[in-house]
Length: 219
Figure 1 (cartoon, rainbow, N blue to C red):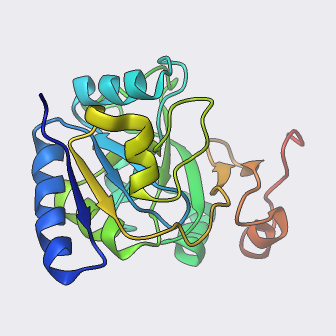
Figure 2 (figure 1 turned 30 degrees about the vertical axis):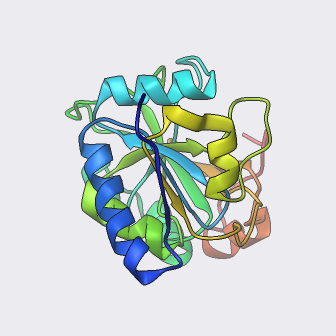
């Protein structure tokens, strides 16, 4: 039977060992559950296609629902995308780390398979110290909410474990999610950024930084 480990990252001793175990699991191609500033995430190495496949299978999703990618620094966006327009630079400077997801065209040189993405990727830098520390160790991770499709998102690692069980190697517990509001998604694949989903950040928040931004369906 597969070994499943849950670490309480609120304890210094378990935090260090948990982060090491999670990073090792990601490198091996296993799935992990990590805290973020919204809900808990189910994560995999973004550059291991079989790991991303396992993530989608565990969530009971098809390739048409490609997972977003979380990064541990603002600079990581430069390595994933073809170019970073000024509007995106301004948004990222204002809201990363935080609940902003930007949809960009990814570089064609990247060796990954996130699903049927039509050459785009949704990228976010979460505002959570455990998540950032793990991402800085592993590099970009494909991360979706830690629940099976149709079930409520997990607000703790224990809740995620109840749904996902042995499909995940390492669970990192950091207590209840501080905010269950989803991230705001902004499509930055054209000259005019479009808010596809207003979540923790409103359209007004986005417009304060990027006045040209439009709301859902206004394009």
